[in-house]
Length: 64
Image (cartoon, rainbow, N blue to C red):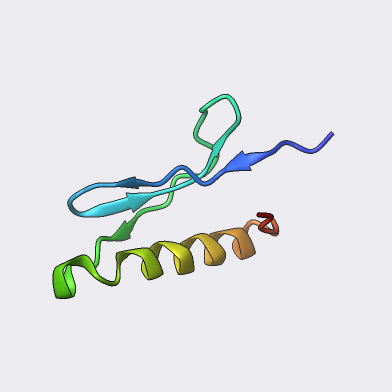
């Protein structure tokens, strides 16, 4: 049976971190700079792109 992951996003003041399993254990911790330009308007797009990039690196696919 495949292990399922969740995209747990911790938005801090300087970095954004992702990926936990269903037990809340960190599977892959990645950090990206929080894009504070234009009052943080770009943060959701930055998070989405980062998740897609990390999933590609880990050879995992995103399901909704």
